[in-house]
Length: 234
Length: 405
Image (cartoon, rainbow over all chains, first blue to last red; front, side, top):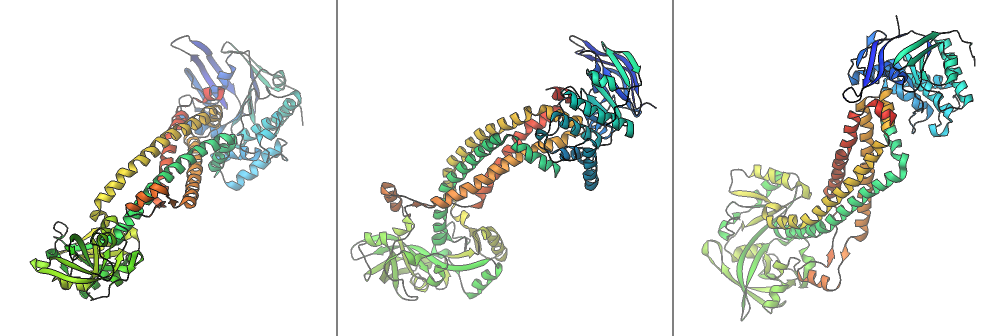
C-alpha cells in the first residue's frame, strides 16, 4: 500500500487566460520509509507537485491519496485538520514562530492537536534532543543560526507524528556544514525510525543522499531512479 | 493559554508601533473622559442641590398636586404613614415632610412674592446642609412664629434679623392665611431662584398658618444610595397602590434639568465620537499593517494545521490586548488627572458670573463610573470593528499565495 499516490494529476494555472500546465498527468507512488528527492529545473512542477501532495493546493484534475484517503476534493477545513495529523512540513525559510522559543515552536503543533501537556513537554524535549538542540530549547529563532532553526523546523515537523515529512528546499539557505548536519539528522531518522521524507530540491547534496530521485520536466515525471546510497551516520 | 501567549508576544514584536497605537487610544480616552467629567461635574452639583434642597431623590405627593400645586391637594401625614413608608423598603434612609405654597411677603411698605416652606428642621438636616448657608442670626424654633428669609428676598424687602415679616395669602380650601413672623435669620441659599423668593418656617407653624394641620404637600425620601432611587420608588409605588398618593423620582420632577444636561453634553460627546473615529482609523492602520506584514506567517501556520478560526482568535486577542492596554491606561490616567485638577477654581469675571448664578466659583469634576466604562465599551467596539479586516483576510487567505508573499 503506497503512503502517497497521485493519479493522473494535472494542474493548470490561469485556465481562462494564459494557461500554464504545471502538472501534466502525474502518476506517482511513494512508499512508507522512503527518502525521496524530487528535482527538476525551475518551472518543472516539483513545487506544485509537493503542494498537491501536501494538501496545500487543489488539482485541476486527478487525485491525491494519502494513506488511501483521497484529499483532492476535501474542504479547506478538512485539509487543515488532515495536514495537522498526517503531514509534517519543513520550509526553505524555516518559518518558525519568531516570538516562541524552540521548545514552544515544537510544542505548538502538539497543542493544536490538543495533546496532553505532559506528553507535549516530554516529546518536545525528546525531539529537540534528537536534532541536537537539547541545550538551546529556550532560545528564540533570532538567537539561533540558520542551521539550528532548520533543525527546530524538523523537530516541529515531527512533533505531530505525521505519516511523512515534506521538505521544500530545506538546505537552500544553509551553509555546507549546516546542510550536511541537517541531512545527517534526517537520514538517521529515516533509517532508524522509518520516517518518510520527501524533498523538493535543487541541492546536489540532498540528491546525492536521497535513495530515490524523481526528476520533473515540464510538469511530468521524466525520470524516477531508486538507488543505493552510502549511509552518512552521525 | 498558548494563544494568549502568542498574541501577547506578537504584540511586542514591534514595541514602538504597539505603544503608539495604545497611546492614541489613551489620548482619546483621556480627552473624552476629562471633557465629559467637567460638564457632568457641574451638572452633578446642580442636580445634587436641586435634589437635596428641592425634591429629594424620591417624593410622595397627592396625585393631583403635580398638575395643580395647591394646598387643596395636600395630603394627610401622620406617624402611621411615616411608618408605612419606612417599612416599604429597607433602603429608605430619611424622610422629610414639607408644606409649601406661594404667599405675599411684606414689610411696612412693600410686598414681594415668596415661596413659603414649612419644614421639620431636624429632618431637613438629613437631606441638606441648609444651616451652613445661614448668613446671619439663627434658625427658627419648632412651633414658634419665626422665619428664616432668603437673602435676596430680605434685601428686596429691606428686612434683616429681628425685623417682622408679614405673610399674606390663602390657606387650604380658601381659608385666609396671614400672620406676622419674627425674622431669626437670613440665608444665602445656594439655589439662585430660591435665594430670591424663599421663606423657611417650622412645619407646624406653617400648617397652622395655612389651616392645614397635619397636612403636607410633599414627603421627600432619600435612599441609602442615589442609585437605589428607582428601586425604592418601585417599592413605594407598590406599597401605595390604591391610595391617592403617587411616587415620583427626581428625574420625573426635574425633567428640564436632565434635558439641559443632555443638550450640554451633546458637544463633548460629539467631540469624543470624532476623536474615536480618528483614533479608530489609526488603530485600523496598525492592525492592517500587522496583518499584511504577517501574511506569510499566517500561510505557514495554516499549512502546518492551525485552523483559520484559531488564527483569527490570536489576532482578535492581539487587537483586544492593544485596546485593553489603551483603555485601562486611559482610564487610570484620566482618573489621576481629574483627581489632580478637581475642582478647577475660577477667578475674575468668570468667578463673579458663576457666583451671580448662585454657584460656587469652581468647576467640579465628575467621577461617575459609567463615564469610565462607557469609554472602555467604545474602545472595545472599535477593536471589534477593526478586527473585521484581519478576520476577513484570514478567512479568504490562500495558503500558497500567503506562504509565497
